[in-house]
Amino acid sequence: MNYFDINDIDNLSTWINEAIELKKDPLVYKSSGANKTICLLFFNNSLRTRLSTQKAALNLGMNVMVMNFGAEGWQLEYGDGEIMDQGKSEHVIEAAQVVSQYCDIVAIRAFAKFENKEDDYQEQVLSAFMKYATVPVLNMESAIGHPLQALTDMITIAEHSTKARPKVVLSWAPHPKALPQAVANSFAQYANASDFDFVITHPKGYELDPQFVGKAMVTINQEEAFKDADFIYVKNWSPFADENYGKVINTDSNWKITAKKMEATNNGKFMHCLPVRRNVIVDDEVIDSKNSLVIKQANNRTFAAQIAIKKILESINK
Ligand code: AN0
Ligand code: CP
Image 1 (tube, rainbow, N blue to C red):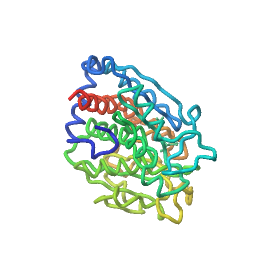
Image 2: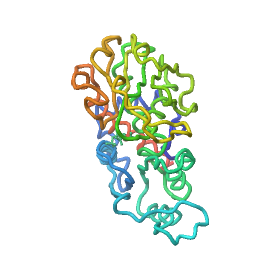
Image 3: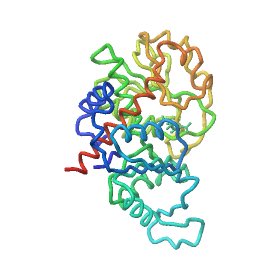
């Protein structure tokens, strides 16, 4: 099996409960990855994903190889039948098969490039690796999804929820650079698969792909959205719509998360996947408050990765 998106999870609440259980004794499956190797390929920067996925693999007794592919690998070609007389040195057809011979799982981070919406939304990089690799593929944030982050977020909400059906709000916040929709897409997808009163709030023009929005309540009134919320999950993303795809069309600081806005919530918890720009996305006062879960959330990245890798290992050993 791959862990590419939510469709690779047979039962989300089982995965969440297993991850919470694993936290009590992270080394309990130390022998399950013995003599197996995971190779982590990064086409983009990372702090949490790189270290927590490595840590998860080590907890499972695996060997880990990490490559900063974006800076140190050959530039890859993805197109079929290309005459490769330009800048790209190697085709993914060879690269994926070659990497597969050195490891048992290949994990990949490859963000949206914002060059061509179709390439991004067809998951050009991850799809090619899944097509040509001969070992399972783990998604460490692709063009349109971040399933390890979303699993982490569901684990964190499960741990901190005091209600059977919490009100969970995904709020856009301003950012100076154009960021992918991946984190928001996956969060929405996993939130829709959970028993939440789920609300998404963003300025006009920031509508997400309907396949991820699903049954969520969507509003451009952030103040209204925050009312009685139990969890405020904040993330910037750039527009999905064709006309402004991957551009910055709004930097309105009125969307920043402030202590005043948090007052309208039901003693709501603040969540963000990190990295976060302080006092642009969120005021210090909020991220430093006792209701901020960001550090605990980052810790859960290890256990989300460990569950996903464990499931992949089980599928290999079957
Ligand atoms: C990335 C993004 O928004 O997708 C990674 C988040 C985990 N964020 C930045 O590039 C700042
Ligand atoms: N949340 C997250 O994926 O962080 P990194 O980009 O630092 O890995």
